[in-house]
Image (cartoon, rainbow, N blue to C red; front, side, top):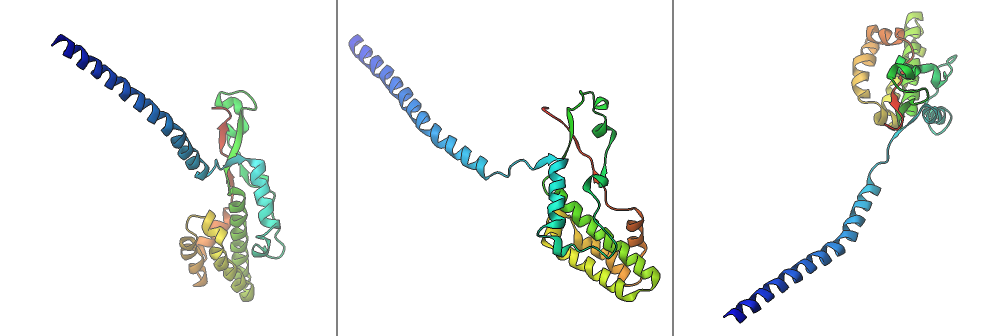
Length: 205
């Protein structure tokens, strides 16, 4: 009986050893496959879309001089401002010491597409201003052209991509103007050209 017990014990120990070996082998073989799947998932993810002001200026310049230029013709006598003129710089962004970090450790960062969106925003504001001017001066042809430009703006693919609700804006601001109510449009025009908020980021944190 003792011999049988010893044999059974040995067989049990052997079974445990074999089980552990199988587990380790399966884990080892699955690891490369799992790593490959994770790598593939990472490659499919959208890369980080933030960047410094300089990259936004490049986008802005490309928008007003490149493929969008034909769709973004400003009213006569209006020119594109530099993007840096439209940046609202907070104390946090302009004075790193106020954030409790050393000089040079805070920089302005923006989402990709910010430069294009800013060009589109200025374009819409410029044609709003032209609409208000034409209405005040009784220039019906110029007014019709300006309101039509604002309608076209809502249909640009880039507008629907970079602006949350262009159709809602059109219904709230432009349609009333077509009916002779310029209150909402005048309010937007009097606020001045669209500003670009400065978003500060602490480097390395």
